[in-house]
Length: 185
Image (tube, rainbow, N blue to C red):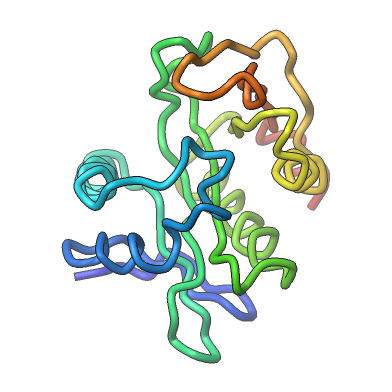
């Protein structure tokens, strides 16, 4: 059974359920959407990520969520909070936020709308002291949204990740503290 974590004007953000991997595989797992995220994934990889996310939600009360478009009831994206779990990152365990949006819903403002709700969730209900977001310099849309959300580039947190091609290295990080977020409200 899914929980509704947040609602925005156009979206419902709900927890991921057992049967959702096939839906994500079909709607979000495209070459364009996954271009800067390590490429298209096999269904079993998505199932493993979902299992990890559901366990995180049960244990800590946060994870990644599906973005459901209110007007259609369709899943249009994936967003949420997890722990930095890359062993090469200099800040393991930090609260990491992230998102991706279905290609046919790009440029509608869904990522920003969802991430503003995720930041509210992170700082008010989860109690995160700060959040980070990871991307690459080549993923311009991603880091521009991070800046729009008030996040600040932290070059001291950059790291090389051999799982990604040279054009997506180094992994760069943006940072936002609860105090910075509160000041902007």
